[in-house]
Length: 321
Image (cartoon, rainbow, N blue to C red; front, side):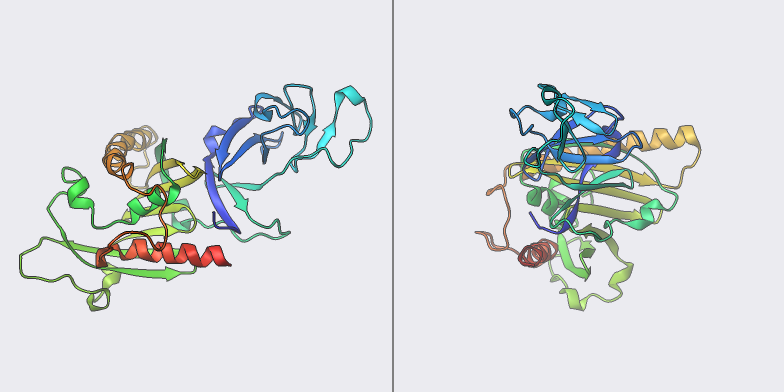
């Protein structure tokens, strides 16, 4: 994992008041719960006493209570009350690790890194907050999150994997693509065309007015958006579960329909098509070897793989910081 990053890890709707939830993220078993004011808390899902899962416990005001012997934990993982010991001060050694978490954009974000007093802003595609509504779904893929991400950076596979959906038209010739970074945000511009048997793919620097082309964006470390139009976007989270599994969240954002009933209908129906497209990808991505991608592997990459290459370089760069 890349340290000192905000990872999108959970859909806000999954976490209810007074109902803790146990999840595995970034290779750690975690329990999340809401305080009485709705604030999200996250600590390791293992009682320091006898190792029971705290996620099976209940919420007592702002604390979570172990289901085994009633130990109560605060948001920093410290035990504040041991029933068997009565109303006595709890020694400092009774604690578990915790993560800083924030809730924003209907997403729960986890800070993976040094616990600083002031943390960086949460990275998000801010325009999605400008009048958009959304619908979506989630599923688990048995792959490392880098493989799931790279699938969405792959501009070469469309006419082959999605020949009867978003890849219609047999546009197999890949010009560029053009890749631009702004801090940790990658924007890549796509110009795929039908191969006439004579043309050679244009190199990125040969493409003029690339800003007018179809574009997609990837925000390090684990969110992506497909900019279909100014009023329609597909958004994805690739939440690392562990080295072999990824929780994928797909959202369809739109702002062309504002009538409440029709808006909800369109947002919900979008999941049918998006799931179909995602499963076309899933069928192939699950076969990739090795399970986790690296900057240097036994692959023969081509010019059209530039967004993937750039992602791997950025990932290696951030891991070294």
